[in-house]
Amino acid sequence: MFKNNKGFTLIEMLIVLMIISVLIILIVPNLSGKSKGVHDTGCDALVKVVQAQVDLFYLDKGKYPADIDELVSTEYISKEQKTCPNNQEITLNNGVVINPNPDNETE
Image (cartoon, rainbow, N blue to C red):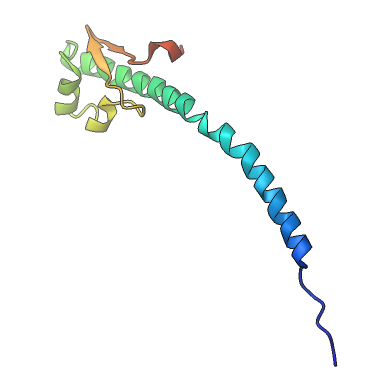
């Protein structure tokens, strides 16, 4: 009779599981701390897009919009673009878009 000795032993499987567990333990804490930075960067990018739309509104209409809702009602931006990924609302003051998170504003 032929013996089929192909396959993994229990020890080999446990070693592989241990290596995977160690990698997960090292990687997951690093990923969770990055979400705030991602949201802040996304907010900075959104502020720049909305500012470009405010400038376009000015070029089209000859005046700045009174508020963000006027940009939405005239379809220069969508409703979703009123709020940053971190759920802070973007505001408008005299044609300048105000970043709700000024600590991370980049130029």
